Amino acid sequence: MKQILGLTAVISFAMFSPTSAEQRLYVAYPPQDHKTTSDRIFLIGTAAQEGDVSINGQVIPRSNAGHFAPTVPLQLGDNTFILRYRNQKIKLNIMRIATEAIPVESVSFLNDSLTPSENMAILPGELVCFSAIAPQKATVSVKLAGQTIPLSPQSQSLELPDNKAVLTGLNQPLKSEIVKHQGCGVIATNSTFFGEKQILDLGQPQYQLTLNNQTINQAATGQISILSPTQFEVAEVIVDEGNARTGPSTDNSRLTPLPKGTRARIIGRQGEFLRLDYGGWIKANETRITTDAIPPNSLIRSASSRQVGDWLEVSFPLQVAVPLTVKQEDQRLILTLYNTTAQTDTIRFNDNALISRMDWQPVLSPLGEESQNAVQYTFHFKTKQQWGYKLRYDGTTLVLSLKIPPQLQSNLPLSGLNILIDPGHGSKNDLGAKGPTGYPEKDVNLVVSKLLEAELIKRGASVFMTRKGDEDLYPQDRVKMINEQEPDLSISIHYNALPDNGDAIKTKGVSTFWYNPQAHSLAVFLQDYLVNQLNRPSYGVFWNNLALTRPTVAPSVLLELGFMINPDEFEWIVNPQEQQKLAITLADGIVEWVKLTQ
Image (cartoon, rainbow, N blue to C red; front, side, top):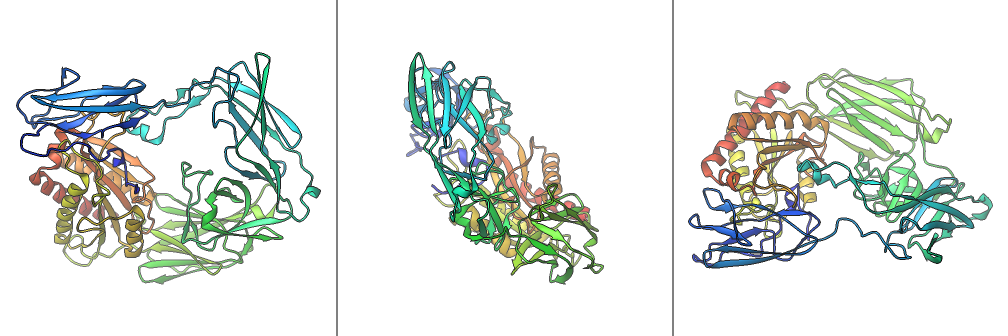
């Protein structure tokens, strides 16, 4: 199933739909045979205004238009709900799945609980940790490469809810009932064992459990290997932007993407991910792997800048395309080049309208290893607002491009400004959230986006729409359009939903999402402007790692303009007069924000 943008992916396609004038009872969510780990769920739907709707015999409240969204509790396992309206009936089956595995009581390990569950490789002398789920009173140990490491039960461990929990305020740590046996150790190896090999395979860790005078042995599914201390594996990024992360899974947070050509030593492996020497992890299929006698590192001496069109290009000649990170602040941008040693005496940086000064400083390795040195460059902006940046390697020269502020051209307030509007979702394969009547989010997104397009054009802006009809676009398609168009602003239009354990009746309001700091002031301003001018409730401003907020070429925000699942707010969402008023207000808000940046 294709990836869905934003927070509205929790709403699936309805299993029930009105088929005639007589069929007035309708359930938009959840679908039949829905599975969830939540201890509750909201039932969204509608019926004619006259008469009562009941769930399992209990009459439920409805909006003036007849919509409903009550929250009902769920027991573990199967749950059946009978909805009735007059002579109509809908039977809905929902299964609640346990959120964590049931602790074992027998002389056994819990299935799939032994680590590592996938192959991994580490550096010689690196600490490696093991974990297994077993009864509290069991004695557990693990054996690898002739060494035995005892594991201790950790009965007071805490689990964190997933990221969506912040949307409902239920994001506090929860005590886990599972007993994990854990322990760490260093696996002793001798460099002579490697010979010409880059990796020394140690095999699968062998776990042993003893309880009630019974002993069992079981191997972990993953194998552990040791990387050679003298033969270095090197990863070279072969995609335009390598997705660097804080750990070896897509659940881990993103770091600055690595430009194509970046080279770094591999210091660890886990499953399909590689750990690079500067600290980030990247999928192996985004790289080409070679071997070398030395780790890749570079000197840097001079640096220079020039203006190319709407961009100020700053060039850093290097011997190797090294890993990097970018940190944005209100009026500063900090670029860090890793595995780089400075021999800098001269930098050419002419006066320009964007940058007042560029400072630099070396970051030396505390161990004196040149391959762990770094150089940090700080750009101080003259302007109040950063309008975007991009990174690329030309051979081994890093080019950092900084967007020059747009120049307004006439008495129209947005003349000279290029704005991209992204109507979220689209096509029958990507409906987004659904309101009580089954009306899909994708349609109202497009309606409001077209109204906004007209209002922005009236104010002098040039507008690009990622879709003008029911096109089937993946998130990466939309991001590609942003990067190709290089607009001054990118606005993605959406309407909201909640995870299953949310309260659809009590939750409503506008919310705004940003990722890169250059978009923060725009997000906060538009949020406050819409809430105050339209007298709408505020659901809040969120930093969020979304595909449509990540582009760096322009301040990019995603707006969730209301909750499709709220029975009352849905009526405001689909009201044509309110839609027009919303578009006018949003366009005015953009005008006012642009004035503040001048």
